[in-house]
Each structure stands twice: as C-alpha cells, then as structure tokens.
Length: 219
Image (cartoon, rainbow, N blue to C red; front, side, top):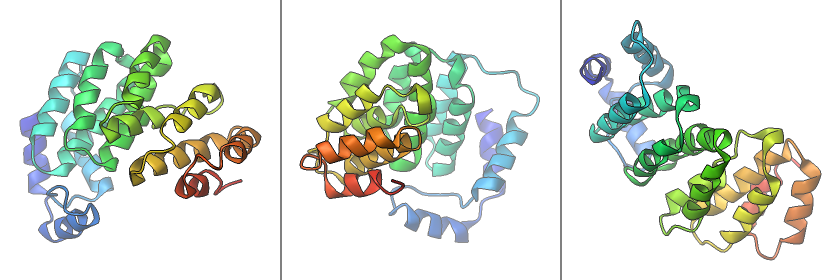
C-alpha cells in the first residue's frame, strides 16, 4: 500500500503549491503540494478494492507514513486512522502517543486527538486514565491531545472532566495549550452555553485572555 501511495502522490506533486503549503506551516515540513480534495481522491484510489486493515496493519501503515518526509503522507495516515478509529482499542494509544509526539504540529495532532484518541476513549472509558497522564505530561502536544479529546462528544461530554482539564493547564504559557483550552470550551458551548459561561466567569482570573476569547466567541 505504501509503495502505491508514494507512486500516486509523487506523480501528482505540484512543486509550486508545495512552497506555499510549507510556508503556511511555518516551514515545519516539506510538502508535495497536493490540495486536500485532490489528495483524498488519490487516497481513495489507493485504498479501492482493499480489505479493511486490521489494527496491526493500521499501526504499520501509520508508522510507515510517519517515516516519509512529505507532510501529505502523515495526513493520509491521520485520515485512515480516523476512518477506522471505532475498531481500535486502548492498546493502540501508545501508537497514537508516538504519532502525537513525533513530527508534531497542530495539523496532525488535532485529528489524532479528536478523531482517534477521543474515539478510543469514548468506547473504553477506562482509557480516561491515559488522558489524565497525557494532560500533565511535559510534552505540550500530549497535553493538547488530552484537552481536545472530547471535542466531538457534544452531549456525551464529561463536562467535569473538561473543566478540570482546562483548569489544570490554565497557567500553561504556550499558545497551543491556551488555544486548545478555548477551543474545547467553545465547542462544548454549542451543547451547554450556560455551563461554559458560568465556568469562564468563575475562573476568569485563572484562564488566559486567549482562552477566554476563544471560549466566548459564540456566547
């Protein structure tokens, strides 16, 4: 699959677009220059006719994509894992941890947090303990993953956990943590705006201005 993927993506590469895509990501990674719709169309062609990959195969494919230099391969892995996340169990979380802490940036971490780790935790509540440990890890991307893992839960959100996580990392000075706190709160505000409003009001002195601004955008 990886050989076919590389051949397909490489043939469609756009070096001119790749320059602007790399610049947008602050020169963190090289790019092939594939726009998202075109990339996903190519991905569907690569996957067409193949049986659903088992968890072990998903792990191997994801790790293989992470070894390739261009960022589009990591996007392929994130999409693939998100599409099969309901078939994964907590035994896959060490692989998610590796992906989150390697070639780390918001573009992959946020998908892994909300659509992979979050899906696993929703199916296996005992895995909350892993999110608890990631929340206080020195790696800011693991902490961001923990904060965002309930992003798609809506009415199933454990609001006590969400608010506790936000308070635990409220004093973190990094932009990506403060932004994640605000984003998680803003997303939950679509479900329970009154609860978010009360929380932000009660803890305005602890939350950063960025977190507050993001959390209250839609209130």
